[in-house]
Length: 317
Ligand SMILES: [Zn+2]
Ligand SMILES: [Zn+2]
Image (cartoon, rainbow, N blue to C red):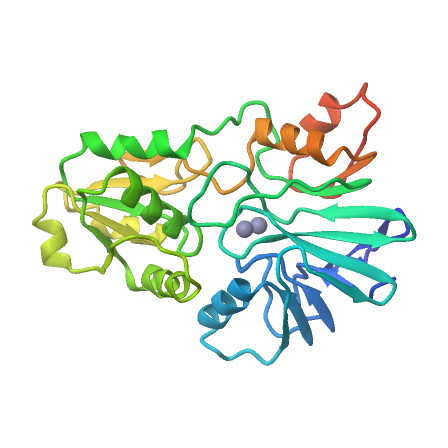
C-alpha cells in the first residue's frame, strides 16, 4: 500500500487520509477501526467502520441509505463541538455542502489543520450555512478549482423553470441535490406541483425527520404528472432516460458541470461544490500556510498561488 505523509501528521493511504496521532481516518474508502465521516454521500460515508464520528443528520441519512443494516458504533458530534482522539483535538464545523455536512479542524502540537470535506459557500436553505475557520494547514477538495467554473446563483438559475409550461423531469443526485432543488422550487416557483421518485422521497423524509423543511412535495403519480402543464418530478439521474419517448416532457439535469452526462433538454447549473471564486474566498478566510488538494485538479490553484506565501501540494497526482 502506497503511503505518503503530510507534515508527519496525516498520510495518504490506500483507505484514504490517516492520522496516526489520533488513530483515525478521514472519509475512508473502506471500513477502518475509527472513521470521521464528513457527510452521507457514498464516496465519503463508507459503511461498517468500527467507530464512526459524524453529525446526527449524517447518521440518519446513512441509516436510511443502508436500510438500518449498519454495525458501526456511531458517535454523534455537533457543530463547534470538540472531541479528543489520541493526541488530537477535533472540532466539527458546518461545510454547507448538504444537510449534516461538516469540516473537521484538527489541533496537534500547536498546529491547526482544516479538512473541508466537500463544501460550498453559496446560500442553500436545505443545508446548514458554511462556517469559515482559520487554520495553518488546509486540506481541501478541488472539484471545480478552475477559473472556468463560476456557478450562477442558484435562486437565479431555478428561474429557468418559469418559462417551461410542460411537465418537467429533473434528474438530480438523490441525496442533497434533490432536496436543495425542492427547497429552491418551494421558494421561487411555489405555484408548481412537486413530485419525487421513491429513491428521492426516502431522503426527503429523513430531511423532514431532521427538522429541515423542504416545502410541499408528493410521491410521484405518473398520470397526474404527465397530464399536468408545469408539474415537476425529481428523479435520480438514471430516471431521465426513462422518459425519452414522452415528447411532452421537458427533461433537465441539475449539475455544476457545463454538460449533462445524460441526454436532456436543459441544464440547471446548480452545484453543491465550491466554484473557483468560492474556493479563493475560503482560502483567504482560512489563511493557511500550506494547502493540500484532493478530488479534482489542484494545478490551477497551485499556479494561481505560485508567487504567494502559500505552498500548494496536490494529493491526487
Ligand atoms: Zn459530497
Ligand atoms: Zn465527494
